[in-house]
Image 1 (tube, rainbow, N blue to C red):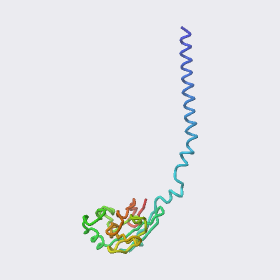
Image 2: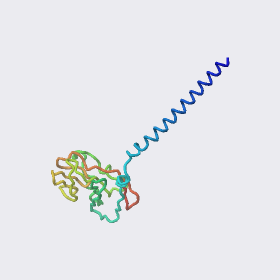
Image 3: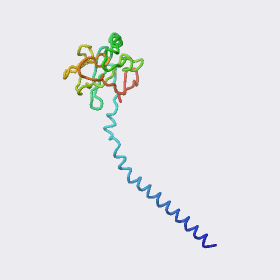
Image 4: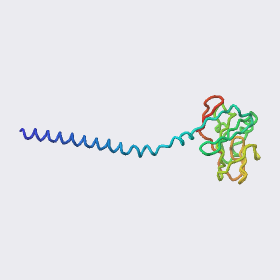
Amino acid sequence: MSDIIDDDKKITRRDFMTLTASSMAAVGAACAAWPLVDSLNPAADVLSLSSIEVDLSNIQPGQTVTVKWRGRPVFIRYRTQEEIAEAREVKLSELRDPQNDQDRVKSGKDQWLVTIGVCTHLGCIPLADQGEYKGWFCPCHGSHYDLSGRIRKGPAPLNLAIPAYEFISDTKIKIG
């Protein structure tokens, strides 16, 4: 009878040792792998470029400014009420990439249009306040965008992209 009890104790001790050794090996592997996993995180200089804040107080109605975000130009246009009305009168059936003007701006801040300033044809930089629709014109291949950044004429297949942005205050936005 005592042999059976001793055998049970040996099995219990062996299980405990196996569990302890396995746990220590797992912790050691995690400690060894952490530097590798941590090296995959973006560097501090890259994180600092992931978002920018732009002061809108110096932009006049009807003016477009260009800022650089993630190595790409971003157009910020302070649209007048006439420009907003003109952009909203366009029928969606006339557009190659149909999108309402209201869907391209933040609700309640219709005067501010924020677009990525890269032509959707071949990645050129369109010129502001140019073209047949008074918006942007890409001189490389002749794409015309309206005051809502929508493609109206030329080879570009899509509207100018809208980046992720939010209003921090009435005169400041955060892009990214």
